[in-house]
Image (cartoon, rainbow, N blue to C red; front, side):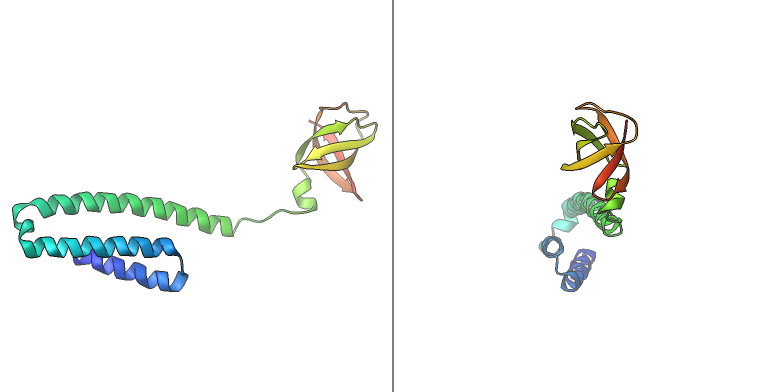
Amino acid sequence: MNEYLISALHLCYFEALSMHTWLAFFAGVLLVIGALLILAVDLGIAYYGLALQVELALAIILIIIAVILGWLFYEGVRAQFKKIKTGKEALIGAKGVVTTALTPKGEIRVLGEFWQATTREGALPVGQDVEVVDLDGMFLVVKPV
């Protein structure tokens, strides 16, 4: 039973370090659970086997919550180390659609933006799927997909 209070105090400590309110919420939940379990022992409920069932149910719930929070933490940390692509490196390899026929110059839509483009593959009609292979000044060099 004291493990709930110890866990709650640990979460309070980590909350003080990180300033995230979700940790404070779960620390409060654990404090309430620990207090209720201490109250259950004081009232004698534990001697009738009810507290054991309650502790088992709470342990299962807390394990599920811990797994979910662990997964969220993992995804958050993984996102912090993901390399952000912008500029030329984001455009090279991006897929787009021709909006104005490329003969060999025209316009395409790629990554939600309209760009002037050119192709070395001959004329490309409107609606043709293309892939950006290079950047030539302010023109994207594309090839059909």
